[in-house]
Amino acid sequence: MVNFVSFGEVLIDFISKDYVRGLKNATSFDKFLGGSPSNIAVNISKQGFKSAMISRIGKDPFGDFILEQLNNYNVDVQAILQDERFSTDIVYVLKSKSSPEFYPLRSASLNLDITDSYLDIVKKANIFHFSSWSLSSDNNLKNTLKSLKVAKKNNVLIGFDPNYREILWKTSLEIEDVLKLIMPYVDFIKPSLDDCIHIFKENKNEEEYINHFHELGVKNVILTLGEKGFIFSDGKKNTHFESYAKEVIDTTGAGDAFWSGLYIGTIIGLDVIKAARLGNAFSAEKLKYVGAICDIKNYKELLKEYL
Image 1 (cartoon, one colour):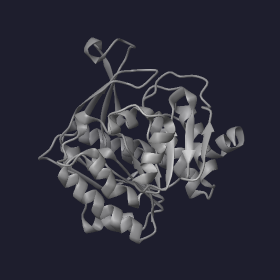
Image 2 (cartoon, rainbow, N blue to C red; image 1 turned 90 degrees about the horizontal axis):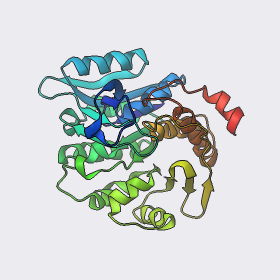
Image 3 (spheres, rainbow, N blue to C red; image 1 turned 135 degrees about the vertical axis):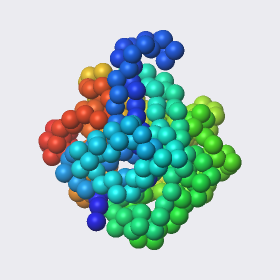
Image 4 (cartoon, rainbow, N blue to C red; image 1 turned 45 degrees about the vertical axis):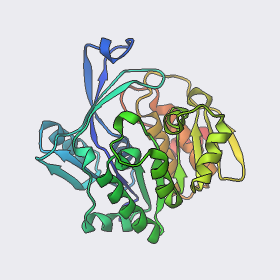
């Protein structure tokens, strides 16, 4: 049994070494393990919990690097298929203190599959997590829906990261039509304001975004506001929390760190508000470092410090 399993992209992030205006002006990059679902799996594993990843990568040097890194972090990789027909995904990311510009080169993540053995992992997990990348082709959407039905039937908590961007979308349905299909299964959604603008193609106020997600069927909404913190809504009450961040070096992976703290709080039995505040603490810690994966303090220390 694993505490956490994620379905979606695992890839290589090439993050620019310097703060420059736009990726077109970046000349040198550092290589990092990346992909939102895998970042969360690593963060959770590093805190002493059991995590697993369901994905596909290329049978190439970057795929080898990914498996080596995940094994080093004790993430269960038995459900990561290394496939010579596809290339490992690469994303170029602009080092940034705000929302980073990125450019993806996608192959394997457009062809995610779920076998019966992979579904057995989902059935036995405490939490199942997925992102919009696992909805971004018709094949991926089909397999995600299959996974959601299995998770819901087995009382597995479900979290969805709506990190939708049009450049990633290869599905024949529009994003809002896909959300109508998946949201009734989802217990937690954590959009940023950027996510909301990209999904709904219009500027609304924060409450309107939150209400729209609830109308689509999700139970709990955590709307992150960058330096202004986040709003938690259970559909009855909206509560605003300030950011704990005091130092910002790089925002890459800050949202993934938030997810990690939220899920760990849930696993150890915190109520949803305290779990979200632990996520806020994880995010503040990550912002001090470059790259999505860093040495976040032990969750027990963060509980004492922030909660």
